[in-house]
View 1 (cartoon, rainbow, N blue to C red):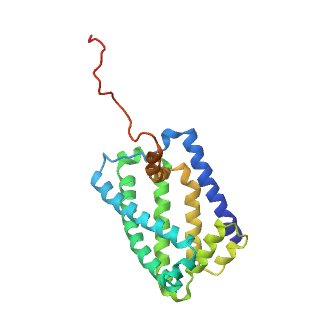
View 2 (cartoon, rainbow, N blue to C red):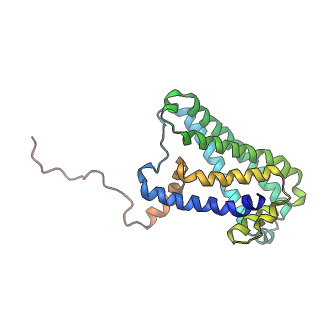
Length: 235
């Protein structure tokens, strides 16, 4: 099961994430949205949304560059494994608390307001619950990362992630001796990738692609109504 979860499941998750997102965009483009309910309890929405999105953005960027950038590049700047792990745990902990507080506010708003709950689908609530669980697991791992920073365990996670993306058959072996809390964190993260195309999270891809779409299109605007006066005779 270890080889499945950390050697095979990552490819299943990434394949479902990519193919499922493309299929949804092609088959059901009008469902590709965040389904905003901003007219209801707006103050709580704004505060929770800002905390949640800023925290998650920092966590995502930290994981992306922290895991996929080769360690030799960090060494060039004098950042050793111990310092990198301590920095990642500290900065990730702060961002995680922000995201958790914001996510809890959004979950409370969606779960307790009967009008918002009535317009929410199963996955609207479930994906928030999964994200909150993932944030909790990440925050639980922070004290362990700080306490064991001298061991440089971050190198094991980097070797695993880079091994997955370079199709190394022994990638899962790097995580054999890491703590169970880290393994649960990775498995739940991969599971979120699996359900990603079937939830409102797909609007993240629109946010990433929007600047490039407008950069390479011929026009960056859309004419909704012509400014010319209508020549049609009045009735």
